[in-house]
Amino acid sequence: MSDQEKCWSKLPPKLLSLIANRLELRSDILSFRAVCPTWRNSAPFSLLADKTTILSPILPHKFSINVPDDHPLTPGLWRIANRPLVLVATSFFIIQSITSPNLPPWLFSVEEFNPGKLNLCSPLKRNVLNDLPKNFPNNLDLCKFRITKISTLYTLSFVDTDYDVNPKYKHRTWANFDKAVLHLDTSKSSDHTMEDCTLFVLFKDSSNGSFGKVRLRDGTFTSLNRCKIKSFDDVRIFESCGELYLVYKCPSYEDVRYKVYKLKDDEEEIKWVELKEGIGDERILFATLDGCGYIADFECFLGNTLEIAVYEFGSGECKRIDSGASQVLWPPPGWLSEDPP
Amino acid sequence: MASSSSSSLSRVVVKSSDNNLFVVNKKVASQSQLLKQCIDNMEEKGTNDVILIPLSNVTSNILTLVLEYCEKHADFADDDNNNQELKQWDHEFLKKFDYATLNSLTMAADYMVTKSLLNLCCQFIADSIKDLTVQQIRQIFDIKNDFTPQEEADIKNENAWAFR
Image (cartoon, rainbow over all chains, first blue to last red):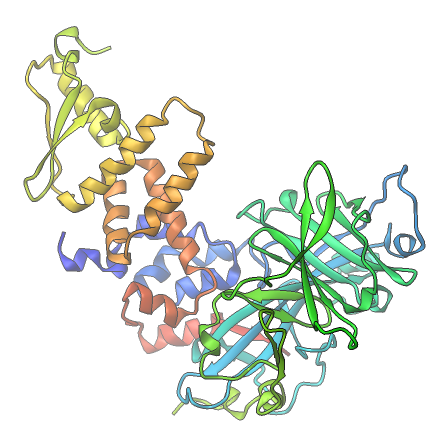
């Protein structure tokens, strides 16, 4: 086979469209279409017809939590059950200038509360930035920058019945969830259909945290409270490689700053098992108010101190890195709105 | 069934484009619809000779890989398709190759009508594209950007995130 035939832009359109048809995300299909003319023609715009969402193929998703009749209705559960909720994806990105790669990157997050529409958020807080700075572009042209996705987290908000019918629906409450930590378990399937999704919910119940899982298909709630969670405020849960983990921020009087637990869920028992050795060198945990994710490929971090604080599980050392951190978060850099020369 | 005069031979010979000969068990060869069709045709004619199938589009490097895949899948042919061990093997199988080999393998799977291998390759390629930027895709697949300025402008409109 000649070298020319090995070229990916010379792959027969029939094969290219087989590949394109397997892409689930709108953004992946758009990237595929932007590679070269042959690839573009192999992935017609019609592929996007049923893919109106940007960050996740199945979110935002509206549902309610249904508590089985034989399940005790605790005050915490009573607050969240049987009310319309929407599960929203929030993704964190690092954006770098292609023309001036030495300029500091910018860390930002966007959420998709209304399908197909992104809201810029402040990464370490929960609020949506409604008043964008003057220099912020109306349309962020993804081809002009190097954008790396760090992680996707999931948040829940209460909405009215109006949410489904009004594409510009804005009203929501998440205060009731206080510091609820949520995570979507997609480990069982790579297809990300609603059928396979289980949402792990951590919510405040009196002063402790209650832990349970919700089958998203029909909202059925199952309590996982046999594994106790104290001091709800200092806990985040996250999923990595199909396993569920919990990070606990210890009180300041203890020697250790953070502890990591892994959920052991088999037929005999369900409990959190402490991992003395941390989560492994190849992963970085990324924690915010709403939850945390992990970063498997942190090549983009090399040479850039982006971490606000770095905690090493091995040595127990917590290094706070302030220099440059604030300008990584705010304000948006000027090169975002500049046209390349 | 084919005529009994020829079915006594359980092996066929497949010739690669660079003229190397591979002796292949019929059950293994049947994983490729192209080879199966050739064997069926020859047997219908009632030949007593060894069946030789020349493949003008597949080099011996790539043919070796396709046959390795066919052999593994022939072993599991009577099991159900959900066999975990086979799935795991499939996954490890493709991970070994660089993108140039993957390209040729995909083309060969298509040419030899080995549908499960073709699906496997396409899914693997789609999975490796996920979450990459356009520049990163061009880089790993070694593709030049040869859009016209007009096309560039269309793409720009298409790939923008609207914030206001």
